[in-house]
Length: 113
Length: 113
Image 1 (cartoon, rainbow over the protein chains, first blue to last red):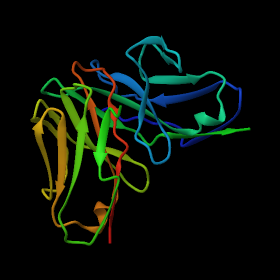
Image 2 (cartoon, rainbow over the protein chains, first blue to last red; image 1 turned 90 degrees about the vertical axis):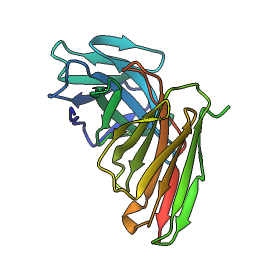
Image 3 (cartoon, chains in turn green, brown; image 1 turned 90 degrees about the horizontal axis):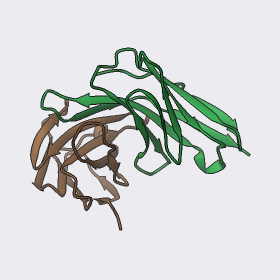
């Protein structure tokens, strides 16, 4: 399974754009890159997913370079409610063809007023 | 409406006891998962079922036995509980094919005394 490496923590002021980068040097051809957000005492919540290039939704953007060995989650204009742990995952089908993913250590984002 | 629900939310028990955690999803998903999140917040997959069939079984002690009576339910039974089993257990669900998001339940905090 591809291992991921993220910064343990980040601080940002409200209103700023936050970029969290994840390294996944051993990503496999069939692996997708997925980001989740987790608030204290809650389960992880899906944010965004991509395979290559750029993906954007109403919450965030995901930038993936051509070699796919890293990815960057971009959160525009963060607010205090974005304070959470953000997990980068890579995963793809196991031998049976079903999804198998590995969660990394996560990045604890603290948004400061 | 709750998409993925777990019961109980909190579970406090003595070492050596046997306990069960229940999970239900109303999303119509075919695949369900159990994850364990320890005190250091590492989130590790334990099991995955697709249409009541076990498809992922990570290195988990035999004391842990998942059971899927139907594709909307995935229960986790733990025998002879140990102190190290104390953690938050999350249930999740998704639909094939690979690359889709997993939806997590609120978690069950298990404390073994």
